Amino acid sequence: MQIQPLLDFTVSLAYRAGRITLGYFNTGIRPDFKPDDTPVTAADRAAEEFIRREIERAYPGHGIVGEEYGENSNSGSPFRWIIDPIDGTKSFLRGIPLYAVLIGLEFEGRICAGAAYCPPLDEMLYAGEGLGAWWNGRRARVSQVDSLEEACICFTSPGNFQKRDPYVWERLASQVRMLRGWSDAYGYMAAATGRAEACLDPFMNVWDCAPFPVIFREAGGCFGSWTGEEGHTFGEGLACNAALKPQIVELLAGARQNSG
Image (spheres, one colour):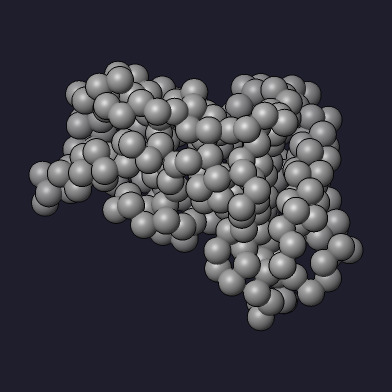
């Protein structure tokens, strides 16, 4: 399998979908609300419709799953495209430029190519298996910080930590240099490019993180579960540089013991 053509297609698709979202950004667009009370807009729908249409045209036998329109009928394919047309719809609605288009490609359950594009900032982060991770044309690398006391940790919502395990939040707040709500995909983009050391989410869908396993692998870091397993299907997210992974996993395990 040649990864490069698939990666080139993924990057082009994320960029073009992102330009679609900019046509709605800061225009006073009003959301609808899904059954889980999360917002969805015409921009989310238009971007996902475009992405799905282009995949179906280029790779008609591939599987597709997206946040807004679910899974297609090609569930038997070893290839599956995972789409979040706007990761950070709440930021998008408030005119905060920290939302992203996320596209990941699975082959036999493992992410082999992915792109995360932040349209308002024109930041493109992408990677393919064995091809490196790239940030606007430059190599992307995680930081080399090896101490929690010097680390910047990103998150999306303190409330989610309270729902999951308040001890995690308390331990993070007492041990790390900085906790910053550079939320949703942008926190992971910051960690993959060395601007932060880690990003944590207590709850996560596959479309919220699909590009990040391959991006972090190729950037020298790790993406996976709170226990340190690599992957995108655990319902939670931990992304960090390799030096800090044992310390963060230990911190999370200690918090679980205290909460028990």
